[in-house]
Length: 447
Image (cartoon, rainbow, N blue to C red; front, side):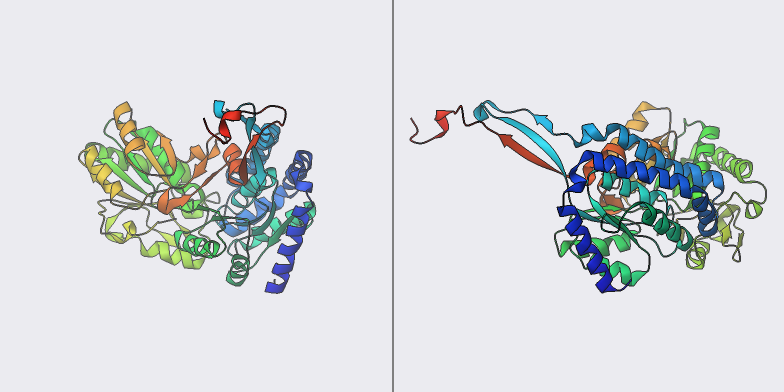
């Protein structure tokens, strides 16, 4: 799409928004119900394209993408009337006899830039929240997940007129053209480097942004952890989507006393969950493209491989791989892995583990395995991170009552459920007085 067409599309969305249709809660409800039906209509095509783009099995496509999008709509529909209503605010005595309230209002025309790793969920979930709040939206899909992006385009076009919701497929030029425009809100999911460019572009127009980025999310395994349970849940979280998950466990910090036991348990779980020959497992996803495949392979130090380490470039698959005796100077610790490679670092005491995490940029997620309330409390309260789990991984994303978002280098802003509605709404603070009564003490001359 050429720049002139993009400008024209945005202008039409601005005109449509100013017409006021999206301010009606009933209009939003109807739109979300139509979107729900369209997702069901296209779900088989989405499963097929998710397999083509990422090698996701039908089950993984359902539980990590399609179903989560559907449940987001169901959650919003259940709460939208309350979320959209003015909220009564306490009024101070000095303001008597008036009343105060807060009114949620849509920003207007929003831009949603979605990533390739969860191309269905991370396109539709912010869209659902944006529409619930009463906005129009232009979606820029990822050029890497090309098959899924094409179906998303068809799905949206089957439900909405372009002046309400539109999808733009394409590459860098389309993204640049969109970011040159003055949107009312920008929602971006992707890498930190691209996030910086998005924020820089938004700053030209003082446009508010939500940035959902990533980072090296640690897993801490304390001496008192249930090792078998920890291993099972770490492998689940790490290898979902072949590690191409923004909140995937990036590396393990394990107490030296239980290191050997954990390594053996991780090896066992990788075989139990993905088989002796994971490269032949049709339910094991592939890497998105050759560029990312080559980048991940270069992070594998063959001298430190204690499990896996094999790969198939033709099918873009890398086996679940454990690197042991890793230190902070290793290449694998210098960037977010975003693949099925799991480095292990040991510590001798909790303060050492905390200092290691402090020495790095703030992660999007943190996972702590321990039965000690004191240890749990220390990691939750002493370290800055987006969100996470105690004695589990990843599943905090599936709770629509929990907001999801980054912290510092891993992003800013939250969404999911009520927090998503809030993200795409501006809350107007209103004081309403009556002409029938007045308080004389605020007027001059003062006595």
